[in-house]
Image 1 (tube, rainbow, N blue to C red):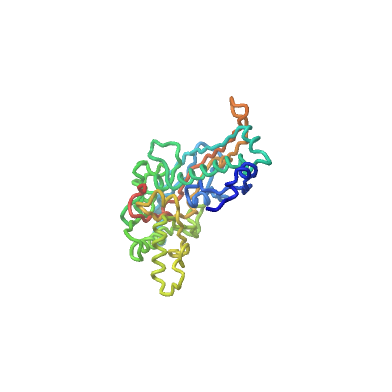
Image 2 (image 1 turned 90 degrees about the vertical axis):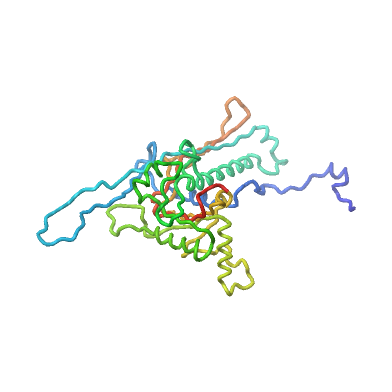
Length: 357
């Protein structure tokens, strides 16, 4: 066997190792990507806020019924007007997140130059950030365990969305929340339901056909010449989110349909769209919803977060920890809630109910 410099005791004892300074290689993140966090952290991702910027919760009104005053008539016709109650209030309570990090000042002195390889405090802050984004991604795609969970924000698959095997606007009240999304029952207000369908295989005649139909069905734009603002935009910012299994199968389907695919057998990786609508894999769904393999069509015009004024994120500076004179700690707080302002602009096409993988 060859002799190496590390085998020579004097060299091993008298020589420093050579380190890469100033950075770390992150293998701590459990998810390959964070698509919800990226969207929700965009500037102005809060889709609406109370007029005065304060309040104990967030309320928006749904207009569920028009009136019946429009009619055909002749000349000298007698007026015949009636009023119809047509609104219901959707109520969103805020939910709260917190995190933090700390260090002992002795640790800082040990980590000082010239012995410092990587900044100790920034390492602790990096760990804090990973935990923060892991939680927010899980909150958005998952949600509360049941109605007794009053701390977890209202996520998609455990609150806002409801699976149904029949094609149509059958996504009603989640089984764990009989009062309906935001306190509005779909049994009473059927137009508050979202579009659903169920598929068995990824093929042109099954999943693709049902997604194409869903994209057409949820294209609500509302009336022209609206007297006031509503959340039926003419343009839609829809992205279809799904699992890695589904993405793989769609890409393989695209390759199989291309008789001129050439030597690149991954030609359509990351390029498959349906009706010009992007398809994006969500690692959290891949890890946690592999049984149902859902396609979730989200129009980002009507999906986002709401929060009290100034409480999107509150960063607290380092302070001395109580009863620990040499410990410095800092915290981060946020108050927010996820919201779907118009469920008719959202669809799900899944193999089954949103069970865990």
